Image 1 (cartoon, rainbow, N blue to C red):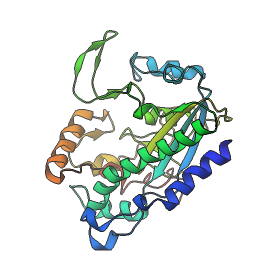
Image 2 (image 1 turned 120 degrees about the vertical axis):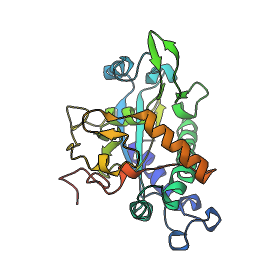
Image 3 (image 1 turned 90 degrees about the horizontal axis):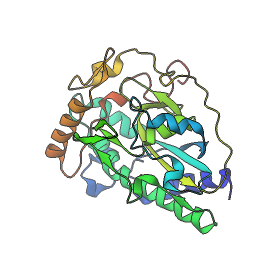
Image 4 (image 1 turned 90 degrees about the vertical axis):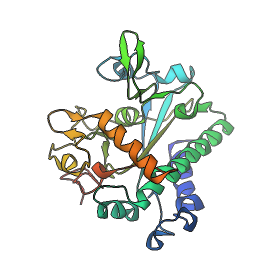
Amino acid sequence: MDKIEVVQLAEDFIATSPDNLIKMESKAPREIVGERIYDAPIFGFCEASDEVFAILKEPEVIGCHFRNPREWLPTARTVISFFLPYSEAIKTSNREQKIWPSWGWLVGRVEGQRLLRALILHLEANLNKAGYATIGPTLDKKFFSITEPIEELCGEPLAFTSNWSERHVAYLSGLGTFGLSKGLITEKGIAGRFGSLVTELYIEPNKRPYDIYNAYCTQCGACVKQCPVKAISIEKEKDHRLCSIFLDKTAEKFSPRYGCGKCQVNVPCESGIPGRNK
């Protein structure tokens, strides 16, 4: 198995899965039933032994609780990262709603996340079958994600963090750089979801076409204006607590779904890198 086969497996899965279509039973508006949730994925790759992973253990980045690739899989050679861009139908629906998330976005966030997890398992199974031990860290029993502040670890208070970060891994894999909203701006934009795997298969790493963490962000402030709870500012960037409180409100209002995504639509980085993609 090689890079081309991995990418093709993912593209075929997303293109043919019936779960990539918005279904009538989701109670979505009739005009978006049958529309895709995701467009074709884009991929990035980096070496599991890359010394840059050590940077993610620094307190000002993620922290000592971050597990590097070989802490997940000792024999790992490659980290596979992918971005699933939301379809135009999903993005358009959320542009039209000014405060609450659109039904299309809610489906994309919840049913779309289930499909993303299924894609990780699909790739994991095929790589393992080909003889390359592989795991998806976010699906592993050792994975944890923290939203409420808890006791300190290594002298660091933990809040709004996890021991594996899809966005940071995507950044290291050459897929994109961070914006004010803390989303990652890729060549297909910021509106979508990330996934990753750690594998024994060696795939040549991507070159990172940037030198700083926010190279693609123009600091235009569009996401600041889009946020319904003023959780983003140019001076302080994103207040995760305010964002989390609003997400909890959407969970109450739209249970069993939740989401927002206002900072990912009606912005120059919605579907590409500002100033480069039209």
